[in-house]
Image (cartoon, rainbow, N blue to C red; front, top):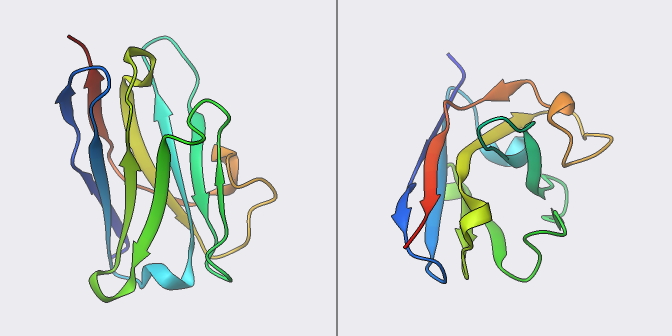
Length: 125
């Protein structure tokens, strides 16, 4: 059974950091393109980050460039989203998603087949 599980969310003060994990079961993540998305209350789901299975190339939304990084640990079948210099507007439920086919846009939620259940990130003082 294909499953993605996110973890690492929580409450953090502005300027703080969190590292989210996305663990796969039922398939090997290094054979898939991985996207990170977030959705705040009343807003559409937006793409945050993408990492390619082919060459490890990454892509980030303008709103998080320079603050977020994404990486893989194939031995652990895990993809990480490191979030630094967090802002209140980063508060949302964060999801990872996977697909075997290269997305037309790595930051479009419509290009992914498999999704995790999400983890809540709250940035507040």
